[in-house]
Length: 242
Image (tube, rainbow, N blue to C red; front, side, top):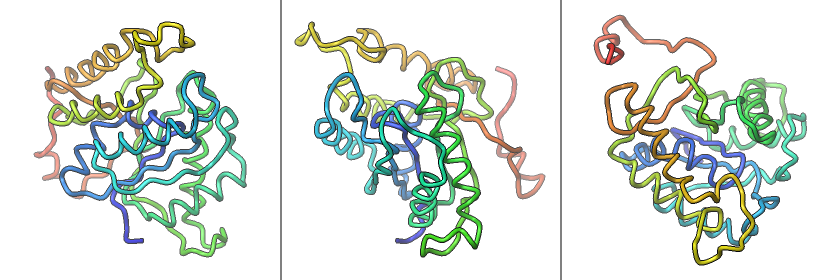
C-alpha cells in the first residue's frame, strides 16, 4: 500500500469520529489520504451489536470521505499494552506507513482509551526498530497527535474544523444505535444515550474553536515540542491573545 498521510486509531467504533472527526473530514475532503484503525469492534457495548456497529462505521466513514479502515481485533473492554498487541499495531503502522498518527489521549475514564493510547505510543516506537520482525520494513511516522475523549483537556494546539463540523456531527449520528432515540424509550441508558449528549459534543467543539477565534475546533496534545523548519514558519502561525 502507498504511504498514507494520516492514520487514525480509535479504541471503539465512534471514538475517533467524536474526538477528531472534523480533522478527518478536513484532510480527506482536501484530497489527503486518511485511514482508520479500530482497535476493537465494540462488542461489549451496552447498545447495538457488532454487525450493527460495523454498518454504522461504514456509513460514518463514507460521510468523512475515508476510503480505508481496518480492525486490530483486540477484545473490547480488554485492551492491554502487551507485546502481542503491540506487534499487531506495528504491522498496521508498517502497512499504512502514515506521515502522521492521530490517537486518543491517555487521560480518559474508559480503561480501553487509556490502554489504547499507551499501546499506540509504544507500538509507534517499536515500529521503527529493525529487529522487530513482522515481515515488513521498519517504519516510524513523523508526528503523533493525541485527541481527547473527555471534556477536561488543555490542548497543545487546536485545528479549525468550522467548515467540516457538519460532516463530523453527521458521522457521529451515523452511530444511531448509541444515542438517544425517543422511539426506543426502554433501551438501556449509557453515558452517550442521554438526550443532550450531541449538544455537549457541539459545545466542546465551540469551546476549542473559541480558543483560536473560530466557530468550531478540535484540540490535540503532543509529547514533544513541534518542530518548525525555519524561523519564517512563525509567520504562518496564529497564537495571539483573543
